Image (cartoon, rainbow, N blue to C red; front, side, top):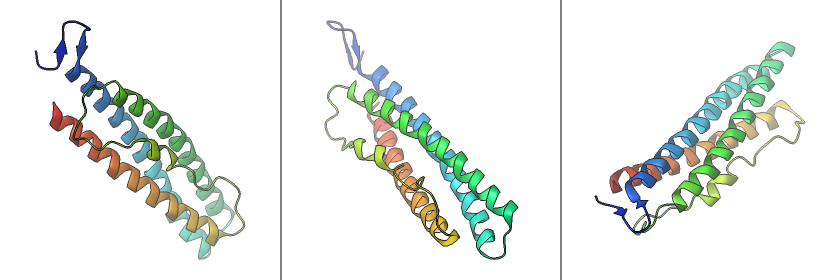
Length: 146
């Protein structure tokens, strides 16, 4: 069997499959956060241009949803990183997951104005999109190494 070491029971392909599954979970969490932020962005635009109390409440509800998904994505990314460390001999794969874990450090501090909120939502959307692209790249490389 390729990737299986009878002396220590290491199965490289099994470890890679586990890392791929962990990466897919992280991607799912990040995509859910991205969807909530997209929705918050839309409600935020409406709120800036004639919204009312209801639109503001919906916007903040979507931001709160995104926050929960971001927390899940952080946990999933940490697990993905641990799974990647289980794979021996990953030469040729440039995998730097550590900085992905900081993508969620964005805007849960409090808001002064609708325009500031909108700016923070857009910044978070860019950070999550970047993290998704980079994670997809790592998962693709893992699949190609099977």
